[in-house]
Length: 442
Image (cartoon, rainbow, N blue to C red; front, side, top):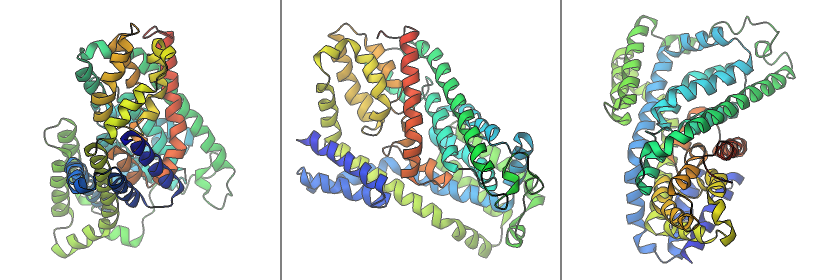
């Protein structure tokens, strides 16, 4: 009964978000609370929500201060040379821009942190896409694909959870997957090139009056440099550019090297950005107010996600869903568990958060597979092909998803509809590569 309520809850939430019948915060808070009441856990809802909020609080703080920091740096003009430099390097060819977005995301995600990847990659690229009138869903998609494949790295959360859950060495899980990751990244870059060419054709079909510079072969005079409004010029601080660069580099290094938590890094960075660029207290209030709306909107969504996860975990619905999913495997499919799990791993990210899956579902699946002579390490490798790897950037159960859509300005439902087919295809390709390369049998 509890598992059924859990599956229905997730399904209702996904339908409501995809159809835009409710805002994300209404769905994330209201739906699980109603489910908890129906399942007889209404009296403990407050405790569940509080637990979820405590887990999400660091991400909320990171996002709020990241919005303020990058907003202040944009006001001061830090990104102007970056945008112009990127445009000069990759031109106005959408194919090169999209492919470059995927390469940048893959490189940055070497640290294994999705939030850091999105915070470092997205802000410099969004102005490029906006200026060229490119579809920002493409940006969100290719960054998600590249980060998803790279999230299999041995210091990433999914692989560490899998190793701990199955009690196997990290290297035993990762080494066979290294060539599989190479296949996955090759598919990601090929897809980015295809999406870029599609953008080129779309922009070429647009009327020339919309933006001549967006179409290859047309005049580039409007793209060479940023064209700033008078209000933007008032806020620019060109004399402090290198100080702003130093602050930004120090912040990113401290965050990537894990010297301090991301929330602390952005808090300190925001304080330094305000003191350096806008020392007047009245101006500081104005600049914070200017970026407060977008920060508050996404903070409420992230807290809503925390409430959702807290209720689903605390009520036991996630655990019950895990057991039910394992029992649904047909008896004749036992020998094919790695392939089946690999194919289902990405969609399972929409149903299970990483802790619930790797510590709740995975051990049960591994135990069932052992009865058919399937090593547990193969079950873990199959799960890593999509569960919170390619699946994490679209899952409503991970705060990073909301960070990605918030930074790109893409609606969550639009992002999911556009990106899920490509992310699922990436998992399918890697599953096929596992079979071909002998990582696990068909």
